Every structure is written in C-alpha cells, then in structure tokens.
Amino acid sequence: MRYFIAITFSALFAHATVLAQSVDFIEPKNNATLSSPFKVKFGLAGMQVAPAGEMKEGTGHHHLLINAPDVAEGTVIPMDDQHRHFGKGQTETEITLPPGRYRLTMQFADGAHRSYGEKMRKSIEVTVK
Image 1: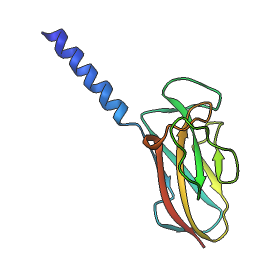
Image 2: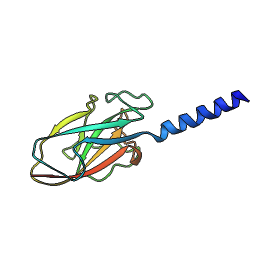
Image 3: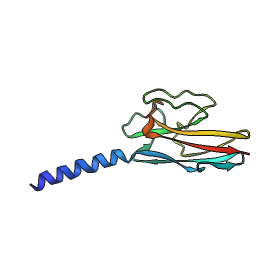
Image 4: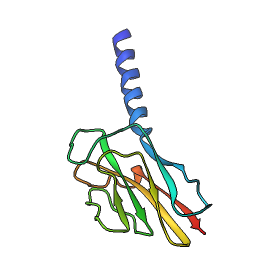
C-alpha cells in the first residue's frame, strides 16, 4: 500500500510541475509608459534556458515579438526586426523603439527556434514616449 501511495504522489507532483511551466515579463510591466531605450527582463518557470542548437527536453530560449502575430506551437519563429532572438541564452536585453504603442510578446522556443506555443507565451502592452 505504501508503494502505491508513493507512486501516486510522485505522478501528481510530476503533473503539477508540468502545469507550472510559464513565462512572464519581470520588466517592463503591462501598460507601462517607457522612454527608449528600455530594459526587458524575461521570467521563466518550470523549464531551463539553453542556447539555440541545444535540443534537450525542458529547455529553450527566449524570443521577443514586437507587434507581431502569435507563433503557433511547433512553428519556427522568423528572424527579423519584429522577432528578436536570444539564442545565446540571454534573460534580459535593452530595446530601442520609436514613440508609439506596442504589443510585446515573449515566446519561449526550443533549440531549433520552434515555438512552444500559447503555454510558453506572454504578451503585454507598453507605450514608448
């Protein structure tokens, strides 16, 4: 009986860990008004940051989408001015944008830049003065 309980508890704990995977903006906050350049800090829970090219389960790296549509799970994230890659494993950066309103989306992706989709995505809105 003890063995069964231990397995059940372990299975529940593993399931809870998977559910805890997420990304968030540490900085800036949603609806912030900023001066350019400004700092962006990426938050991550339940996975580990690894450089592009490393294909280990539970790892990946950050991408910052600027006024870009969401990238579907499994789709390679484009590399252009609207899709900034942090393939060296960076967890923060400084961004320069002209004045205006922006939707910033943090998208975590695997070592081949394939999006982990909605479960590892967070969007905020900011205004640059």
